[in-house]
Structure formats: structure tokens, C-alpha cells
Amino acid sequence: MQARARHHRPRTREDYERGLPDYHDPTGGFGGAAPAYSALTLRIVLASLAIVLCIGGAVIFALFDAWWGTVFLAIVAAGSAVDLGWVIHRKRRGEPG
Image (cartoon, rainbow, N blue to C red; front, side):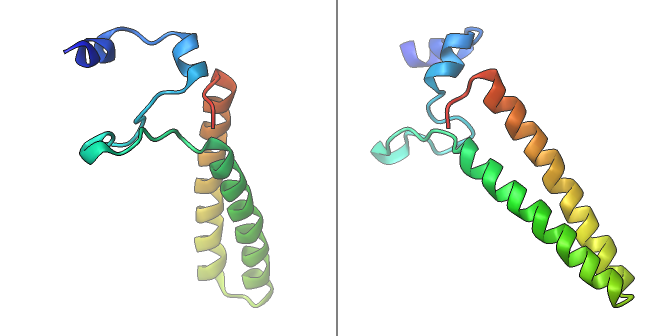
């Protein structure tokens, strides 16, 4: 009952600095599993890599006049840029990872 009451109180900056167990994990704690913590640094690296590779691929497709590939990879790069911005925002807010 205490754990449930803890989820309903407003979170403080200290909560984010300590990390939020089972954050974004709907099955967190199920079957005795250890609480999961977000891997924000890994997401920053992967999103950055996706942006670089997609832009490079879009340039290559553009050189071969394959507009469909250029547009597709530009959209994926834009989505990765949005994700990167959001993850950096969360990291600056104080979440570990």
C-alpha cells in the first residue's frame, strides 16, 4: 500500500536525481525482476549515430537521383533529432542514465 501511495505524490528534483525505478517499464517488478533504470546516455549515442548515418545515406541517395530514399532517410533523421532533443532535455532535468 505504501508503494502505491508513493506513486501518487508529486515527484521532486531529488526523485529524478536518484532515478525512477521501473520508469517507462510497464512490467517493472513483475516476477521479482530488479527495477529498471533508463539508459539515457545510450539513447543519446544511438540517436546521434542514426542522425549521422541517415544524413549520409540521404546524400548518397540524392547523388543517385533516388528521391524516395532521400525523403525517407530525411524523415528518419528528423525523427531521430526530435528524440535526441527530448533525451537531452530529460538528462538535463537530472535523470540518471
